[in-house]
Length: 287
Image 1 (tube, rainbow, N blue to C red):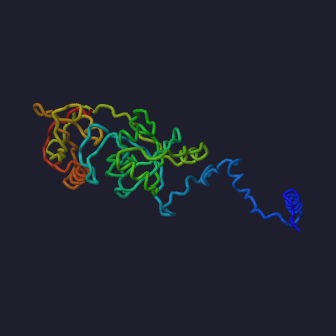
Image 2: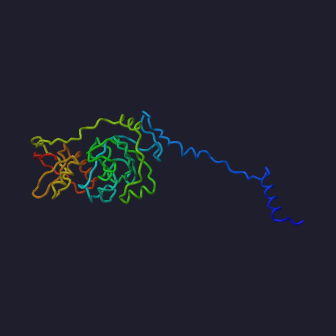
Image 3: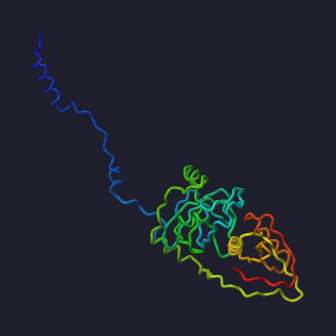
């Protein structure tokens, strides 16, 4: 028996209405819905009175501390860094005493919570009470606003390949989340009081009569402003010599202390720094 088109359509409709013809559907995971509705959880360290314990990608051995940051700029432009690359003031780099050259660190301003990623490419600071020396570009990105020093958190991290490439090319890395107020409060509680950032002019003074003063001559500039900027950074002084302005450190009590100062200047890119002995000579005002 042949069915016409209307009869065939009716049979198919009746079959579709039967209870056993539905195909099973996979359950919809409610985790995706929750992830859109719920706020992102704060890190475990937020509000912890013991201070930072967040994830850096480096495990329990990560470097994580608080201290004071300073910065340096045009006075070192083009000078070789400890890593061998010329210093670029506008790049997002930093000098640190112990973090490996070529590694990366997050720096958080404890006043604002702003956090940036920097490339460690130099050695410093020379001031014992400071934790890290930022390039001018890094200081501006962190929002230091021209202040000579600022309290910060320094945390070694493992950078992503894209962030590492950006920093190596002199560009900022991707944006970081600002630290929450509860974490900033815990970090500030660990901070030691800063020494006064003001450097009052020192009067002219002389070495003790008959004593040999060990000095380190770091560099000589035709530009007085560059010489004074470097002297301020190294805690040295400027001595005029005709049309040149010599940057010197000291006097030091013995040759061993002078040698350490000379080696530190060399690590900052001034490998021609030399030790000289100059008994009972006037010291000019510190800039």
